Length: 293
Image (cartoon, rainbow, N blue to C red; front, side):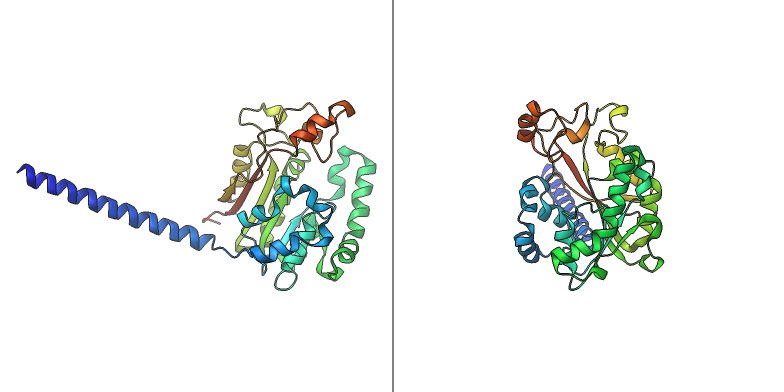
């Protein structure tokens, strides 16, 4: 009888192991199907090594563009929106990457949303918008009409439902502090294909940071707060990476993230200390539309 019970137990363990293996295999298949790799590492390597990026490469060690875009599974045939491209650091990577088989579109915030930073800042933003397509065209050798820039409220309706990836790099804190996070995400969400996704890189605060420090005005946000916000907008986490984390960043400066490079907004005597820390601690999260959307 004991021998029969032992054999039965062994059989049940084997069956359990087989079922577990099957479930794991099925789960992996679902993940692979959802995020089937289409990232072109060879093309990305060539772009990152381009002479055009001679100065940009100084920041690669902190911003890890190849690994970041691999986390977001960006394909050369994707239609991409880059939100708030600024001086074009990521533009000079993304636009050439999708130039032949996909498309690049820049979308940014309405300049007046940043009025709290002063009228001069707003004017500089307006001038930057006016020159963006032409200046990036000159840098990249890509026709200006293939490098359009719109604001959230002026996105052409024909773009709706056509975008594979929206990338929001180090910008969610501004949307939050300016009170335009919901409206901008809604406008960007409308552009997505049913399987389109939003990739976000954002300065990350400690999980126990006080609420008054993570309202956007210091540049840092909590991971759980960002995930919860995106949930209210109809998104859930599809992929995540620690590639842009920086354990040297204490994330608690009185003047916020701008204390660190590349801004270095601290007093001259402190700059060497902050240069040694490097750029901010960042979360890197890819969001997909929830199944109910």
